[in-house]
Amino acid sequence: MAKEPQTPLEDELARQEQEAEVTEQAAEERLVEGELEGLIEEDAALEGGVGNPEADMLAAQVEELEQSLAEAKDQALRAAAEAQNVRRRAEQEAEKARKFALEKFVKELLPVVDSLEKALESMEDGASDVHREGVSMTLKMQLGVLNKFGVESVEPQGEPFDPQVHEAMAMVPNPELEPNTVMDVMQKGYLLNGRLVRPAMVVVSQKAN
Image (cartoon, rainbow, N blue to C red; front, top):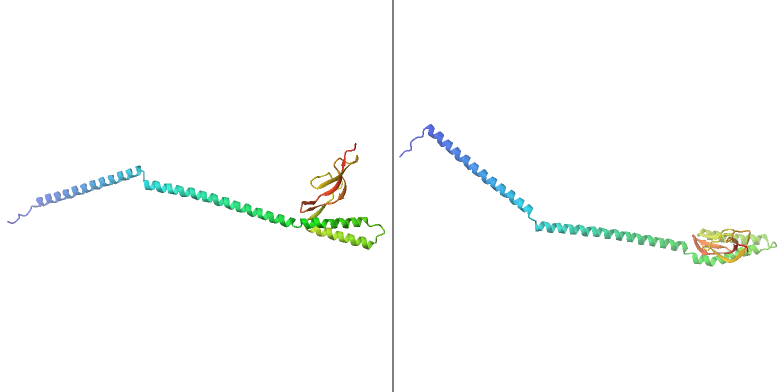
């Protein structure tokens, strides 16, 4: 049986009905999407509110590594400081050894200087100028060599007595001098680069009775 042709009015009604179905389907789809988004956001909020064991473990490991790094830096700084102190002490010891390596040799040489000085002082007027000049030149050369290597004499005539560099051989009353003044130098003292090699043997004044 042949289908009867539809009128324009029927066509319009059918079209509107089809559009209404499409609109309703789209609304349902949007509703479903909105519900899904709400569920996702709710799930994310729940995850954020509940502690994550893996994240906590990682945070603890990071904190432990940072502490280990700080300790390693502190140990490295301490080791560097200790190495610097050791190097400084070694340099000081080397410098000290260099300065005072000749101390024993100087001590052995000083009696020779004393002998030359006494020989020059004891020469009588009858001694020839050549002899006096020879001894004087020898003594001068000897003192020059000692001075070149940091040796200097201590001659405290008229100075206050200093037990650090002087050795009192006698105490003599003297009203003309202040007490504890060096009246006479019996033997000169010597320093090597500022260190006492031999004290000066002196006579010290004391208050007169």
